[in-house]
Length: 376
Image (cartoon, rainbow, N blue to C red; front, side, top):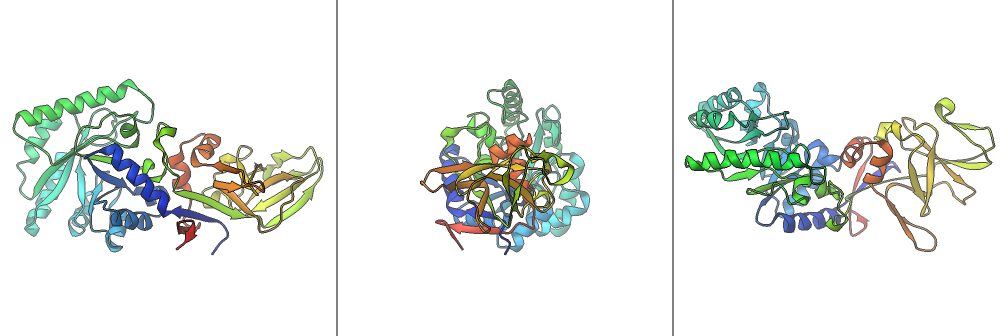
C-alpha cells in the first residue's frame, strides 16, 4: 500500500450519526453517499451505516446505486438527480426510488413498471427556487394530480432542496420553505398525503430550518462538518489524509523549488518531498497557500503542487525520511501538544468548500478503515 492514505474513522462516523439522529428527532435519516460518500468510500460508509440501522441512502446516479446493491446494501436508495430514459429498467431492476422531475419521466417509469406487473415508488421533486431540478412549485399540484392517475407508479414522497442553507440566516430559506409548505397544505386539503416529506440537508438541519416532514438528507455532517460551520455541533471529521517524507534536501538563498520557480528561498533551509499531488486530489490551487503537520508542527507547502508530489519547507527542524506528514487530521508534537488541520482549513486555502476537498481525494489514494485508532 502507498504511504499516502486516506483513513476513514468508523467510530467518528458512528458518532456523527448519533448526533444527527438527536438533531433530526423522529425524522428518518437519509444518509447521502453520492460521489463515493463525499470521497470517503461509498461501500465502506454505507455498510457501517446500515449496520447502525440506517435504512435510506441518497445517491446522484444509478451507477452509484448499483454499487450499493452489489455490495449488500438492502435499504431504500433514492436517486436525487433525474434518471435518463434508458435507465428506467435499471431503476426497476435495482428497486431504486427516483425523484420525479417531469410528467414525461413519470409516465415512462409507470409504463415500464406496468409492463412488469409491478408498482414503482418515487418522490415528487419540487423546485421552490433552486432552479436546477424538479417540477416548478406552481405546476407541482396539477402535475401530481396527473401523475397519480398513472398505473404502475406510486408517488409516496415529496421533496425540495434549499439553495442557501449553507449561509447562516439567509432569508431565501424562509421563502423556499413557505412555498413548499403552501404546496403541502394544498395537497393535504385535497386529501392527499405523503409517507415521506423531506427538505432538510445538512445546512438546513443545523439552522433549525426546513425541519418539516418525515425525513432529513444529511451529507457533509455525516462526515464531520456542519455548514454553516457550527462548533457546537460536536461532529468529528471522518477522513484524515496522511503521507510520509520520502526525500530531504538542503537548499540555499536563491534556490527555487518545483515548477515555474514560484518559490525562491531567501534563506538556507531544508525541503522535504512528500508523495501526494493534484493527481491524488491535493489541488494545484493550494500552491503557496497550504500547510501540513510533521512531528506535530505546522510547516508550509512551498513551490507548485505537482501531480504526484509536494515540497515542504521545514527550516532547520530535525525531520527524517519516513516521518508522517498530515495533510488533513491531527498530530502531536514531542511535548504532547496536538495540532490539527481539517478539510475546512484546506478549503479556505483553496477558496472552496470542505465538500470539494474530501470529494476530490482520488481513487489512487487507498482508503484505510480504522476502528479505535487501528486499521481493520
